[in-house]
Image 1: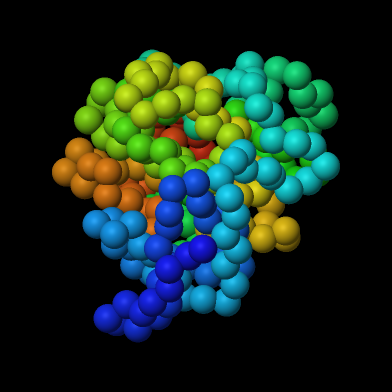
Image 2 (image 1 turned 60 degrees about the vertical axis):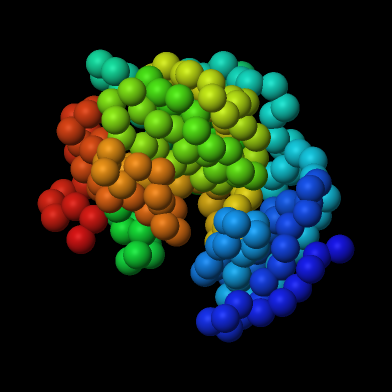
Length: 234
């Protein structure tokens, strides 16, 4: 069972015990997190707690349990685009990957959501190491990568993660696969990767999943992409 209570600033909290995990929220946001007691505060409508185990993604295709081979990985020097396709997928003509120029939430505007075009009907796309680095944290659907370049990278909405904390990865390696899991994901939300970048001074602090570097602008600089136009992330 969960232990319930109230934060000093108001709002319900629940304490997580070993083997339990939060895998679904309905129109909620985690507003506060007390790491010392492993408690979270939710602006509540509905939270469903389930026992530990693999995260099952929505859709007709089950989340892969084995690390897939990626195809179409876009690389430039020591960097690789964070999303690709699985080699076992049939890629329809006209399929493409795209990303938002900024995140829809003002507080996390520097982050980006990354998709395959919906008409292609592809799911569980490989998430790709942006650069060489070390995996520093994994929790449910997200992970944090400390790049050898001194920056930090945040990935969310993955139904399976195939790396471990402390593991060193190279740019272009498969980290996980996307799924309809995580905060602010509903049945109507297109499957996507949430990606954010922090400078070395900000390190692993990604409040709400946002970074202090504009991800779309970084894509422009690293890969000569031209999807977005200045001002970036404004």
